[in-house]
Image 1 (cartoon, rainbow, N blue to C red):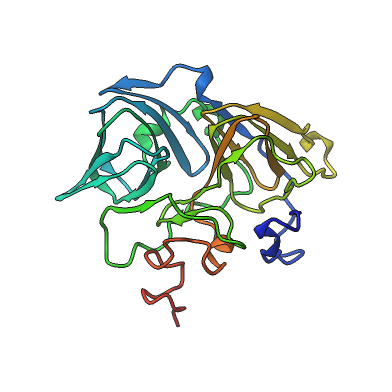
Image 2 (spheres, rainbow, N blue to C red):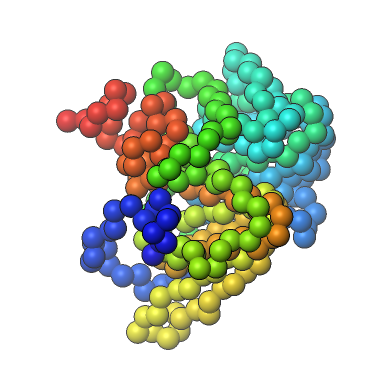
Length: 310
């Protein structure tokens, strides 16, 4: 359920009875990076790791000259430089690209390296096919057994024009009817939501659920209370208490399907939240103009021209 002012209110609802109702549920995952020591402290970068079923979030606080590299990355990954200011140099194969701060970049599979041109925060997003990073995640034990209600991960089509480093500015003005600033690649969809000063209006919350995918909410500034409620079934052993988890920044909350959820910004100053999906969401992608780089990455079943395949 969305407030009438929320652009997501225009999303098409899933047909009733389209899928069997879930009978088993996973809890939410919370990783409060500000409360723990980094998993890695090397090459000028302090990095925390946490995961969902399909993805890994690597949050780094890096010095100028810090290098974060991948020797044999199995698939396309994300480099998010959320703040204006210091940028980075990204090297992949024979390609070398200097990117500014306040940008999002998609880096192809294979060997690559990111060198910070000044002290900065950086977030990398990889799938759990990066098995060397899975063991570094603070919540790795939670996924020793796969969580229910999630299908196997399948990447989306590769970008038009083949693999290369693709970078997009986050400096995009809000447009009425568009939700956030959404970018996607073959493995991820990232929605850099509009920063908000002050608490969220409690009369305009957006409780909703997802049938078959996790949502990762990355807090980069401020404090958020993540409210979650799970369905009741005939088996009381599967009932779960509501969550009202307060998370400062930096942190992530991994919200499982089909929990009803909504996130409430409560900091009196700046609140910044980034929503992450792996693989991309079909419903957001189907909304014309919502995905800002939709011309570069086809949806499943599309030809490079963006038309449905026969």
